Length: 200
Image (cartoon, rainbow, N blue to C red; front, side, top):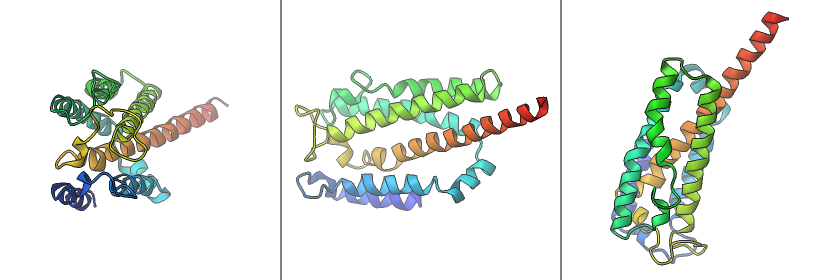
């Protein structure tokens, strides 16, 4: 599913479909709306049962290291005047902190140096930061409701391969955070309940 989705979005970006920014409704909705739908589908009860049983939180924590090279790509796009400065670590994008800390947090969790509550808090922070830059990215794009970046709008994501950032990478990051938060909360709750029953 992810591969098919990524190929479809790559083709649309490659042929210049998203470069037409004055259409009503905005063509970029074909990236944002289906991505949101896929995230919601990935959190339905059937999918929750799957990641409760099979997902390894230690591995998914390391996955967020991908945000470091993403930030480098974004900075490159800024220097080529394809996105506004606010979308980089020199502007409002603090997501690089999660990319840098992911291997450290993952290592500490593997070594049991930090608790699930700490990992949960880190995931919540990571989710807030990715949503923050997502909203800034959307609101600085050449869309009818653009609010930022008028001097240098967010055009880079309309081109291949950069369209894969909002189409594939960001949804995966968001889903991973949300699923880990759900999983960790349940595990913490179950442990607390078990501990309470043991001491009762």
